[in-house]
Image (cartoon, rainbow, N blue to C red; front, side):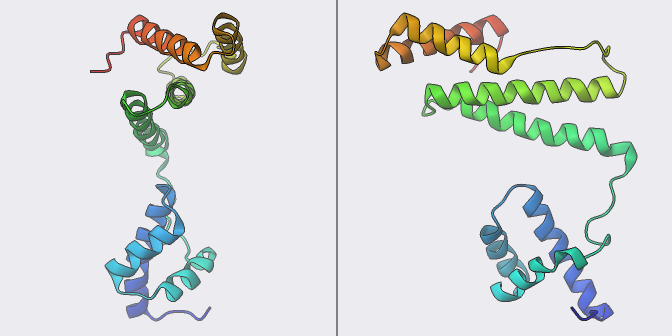
Length: 174
């Protein structure tokens, strides 16, 4: 790829930073290209070609993390994910299976936050062993043993367990 002149580079850098920001936010490439195409008046073909050569963008587009803020930035990103999990759990249209899945992911996020605080020395570093997969499988077995093959009974039981867990944890869905 030929070296861009300074004028061209000054237009490329903000566009590339914006593309990369959207990418790390988890947006699909096709959506990113549509957004950037509209914002910067660039063809889709040019954007896809530029993305293909992103290894040549250099540090001027993707700056190195400031060591002082690495943990804080990671915690902010985890908190953003935490909010999304709570939205799934609180959504009345979410199925019980989706809620249980969101609770499992939320649990893992909470452990990551704890690890971050431990790495900062803000929380004691005693080893914590939690076997979420084993406990989830045990819970599935218990639900199946109680409700049998009746899907309606299983869903009612899971809903009751969710209500119990919510009330026991002090988490208020309202």
